[in-house]
Length: 382
Image (cartoon, rainbow, N blue to C red):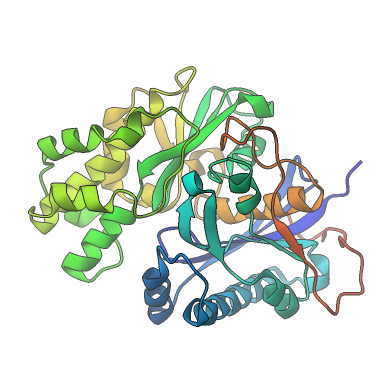
């Protein structure tokens, strides 16, 4: 029987808003305990530096410098979480470090998440798994989404079919038909918050549309939504994935002349319409939708989803999950699966030809302890 391991996950998504960190207990298959967790926003200069790197195709000195700065910020966040939990580094088996995606082109077999796993391992004194997506993309998969196996592990006692919708910068969905890995279907739905965040930043200087206030004052341009729904991506069969900025040019043409409020309302409608179109690919209609990621905090988005989807739509908190920590928890889970050689992607989740593990294990140079320290008794169990 596999030991129960304590793992720490670090996630920075396509919204570029900051770093989520979370602790879990797991044997790589079951989720045996969750929490605590925390979020730290990126300092504005670092966020701007990362935003400027999006679409970069080749390593250079500037990328390396920002990668180091970003990695050290992740180390600070992880250290803060350990202090909050009252844990020393030797009580954590492994850290799952997603890094920051700056390029995702699976059709070219390229994906790039910056983040120095070896540096982070040295700073924390804990083994670190990073570079989760490259093996999948190299094998012909989409490299995304990676969290479906964690959604499935969390949902083992919930009614199925179930849809778990994550609205970060890009939206992605996991359809869970049963308890086996071949009962999973997952793919990117379309824009999540990225287009709206960028629009709001340009027109108001804010980082997001807090509480949907700007969108709620606007009127949706129905013709723009119809044109958006005609994009080729939505008729493609899954699995499929997107880069953060794949819809930027189209959105610019469709909403560029609108007022700030009308543009925000229309971009919210884009996100909702993308989810509605995604549901047409499910083998069976889900009994309910559970929503995680920053988008669930936007009442305009949630209201739109409830109107568009013929099923209950609720934040994941209604079933006891932490929607702010869920992706960080997922990478803590995936780090253990990677270290144990267990699959993290399947034909139905990324389109990879066969179940595949991924990630690169970095051990701290000074580490002389056990490969996987036993879990702390301080964490609550589910």
